[in-house]
Image (cartoon, rainbow over all chains, first blue to last red; front, top):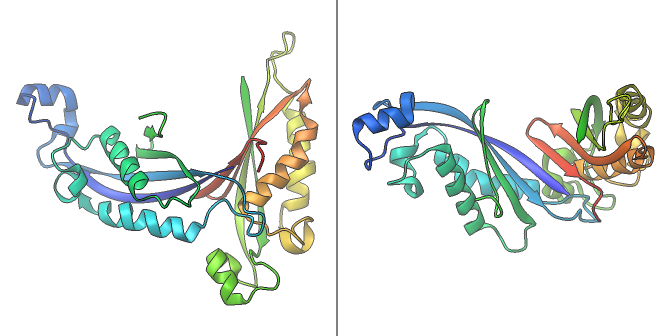
Length: 138
Length: 138
């Protein structure tokens, strides 16, 4: 059984690589290269996979998952500038590919051993752009 | 090929274990343990797998799927209090996980090959919480 919980955070970012020239950055990232940045309402989906506890009827302790994801991600990303204020993104170009990989890695790193498996992280940058990461798909 | 049909139903429920105090149940299930009950607009996605019939071009007759879903899920679940009116939830805690298991049990016998096989049940309790069950050992 898989259980998926959806969270939301709003953040700003700018896509710009110091490895590229101004023209190359503009060609690569287009409007996302705007030096003043821009923002999104991100939707973060966290999926766990496990068996249903025969007593509680649940795969996972939902309040505990909410607390963990809120503490590790939502409270640290919401209403922040991803380029400047999230330490694990420092020096990286915060494309949503990079943001999802970093979030997946951070959740994996702090994931309590006794919990069911972290199956997948999926992020909507907008309702039209969706990114997903799992152990199998990095 | 897979085809997914989506339906909605609205039900009330209480998530609590008999023999536990209100505080213990609140620790387990959070707000869902409120003894007076609460409700959700559930959305159910049912996925059927199979090959399109060479004559009709269909995996399964969707009218038939609609009838089965109405008979097995919508009619018994919609505008009902699950704990009081929908067995086995008089004895089994109506968590989203247990509801998905029960819906799988009700639907699987209807899709036995000629009209596709039941591939996945995805049950949304809210837009931000859903479970997926594919018939694996629960």
